Image 1 (cartoon, rainbow, N blue to C red):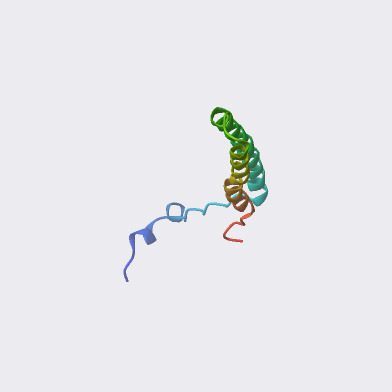
Image 2 (image 1 turned 90 degrees about the vertical axis):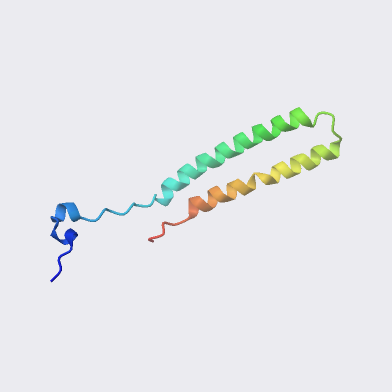
Length: 92
């Protein structure tokens, strides 16, 4: 009968490593909410700073187009944050 080396080890040493526990959804929602608020604040400040620096002498339609696009563009990273927030742990 073959005895593998790990079979001869005491149970204390050969014990399996516990699996990582997933972050609870409630905690993920708190972190996600903080990330969403930070995203909106930082994004608004950056978009306004770019507009102030580069769109000063542009026609009205350039302003409209810029703020329309930047008003919609923040949704892309927000979608990733929200989908991460509501994703259930894989084992459940």
